Length: 411
Image 1: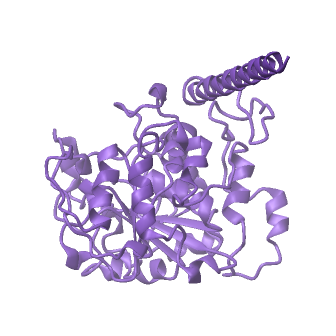
Image 2: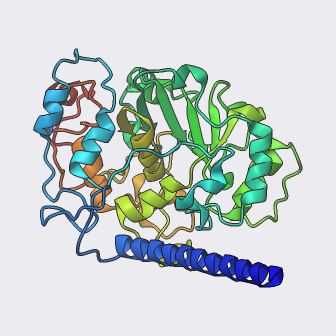
Image 3: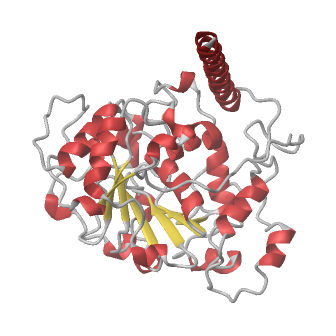
């Protein structure tokens, strides 16, 4: 009798295990199907609660007719804030109004619970962390810090600016305005020293990958956090070498020489949440899903990833130094070098000489709703009377007249 009870319980347990396994597998397949639909020709879009959106939204879920007017409910909500005051939740509230699929909760950096994050667990880099558990665990066990600095974390309202590398920053004298922000995000090896008048002197986060990192230790800012955006598994391996001060091998699958030393202590190093790469690519820009694998044409630019991160982690967002002035071939391509705009019309294998793919929707979002220092770059101008709206610091008309001679029709 006892044996029969044991066999029965064993069979019940086995059945339960099989049912749970089937449910898990089904959920994963549905998850993949949703990503396929999100990143290809989606006919019906849904908001963050799963409700169907109407015909006034495009296939990605953005309002089709973006303009420069603040939605009435948000204008009322923030009406009593004094001019210049940081408005808590401003960016995410406006994003939700124009893009109902937007869901704010997303940690900026990986922490020691990263293996529980379903949205990134089943995707390989750059869209997730699959296969990188041991490397990431080793890195985080050394860094032991997973957030911004305590001073920034304690702010009731955070104003952030993403500083691009575009030549549109040259001779604009926007440095002091950039430094006014709580969080200044810079990308790759874009220098600060010697360019403070145009790009400011403050750096809070420097986001990069191995091939884009500064190779001379003296170039790094003393008070900034070093943030890895991992686009391939070798990037995590490289960061482990950096954190543990081990020898970096030049033959580890990099497409150009990489930094062998970063003058940062482990607590000053972070790993960017790959969710932002995933969201920028498939949700905001609509690049090909490609079964969740990195391929040709589905990798977002680092600038678009940084903007996506800021939309989740900041109350107000601004951008500066994005885009190219294709109408002026002799204008600088980047603010820090002598290469001219004409260079990107010539064949080149250097990714830094190719225009970044922000995608038409994200470009329109930037031009219509985020304060773009230096003006909108797209021809013809989109929403040319207002450039900022996710940054509530300056009324649109004042912003236009204050842009160092930039008119609202500049592109």
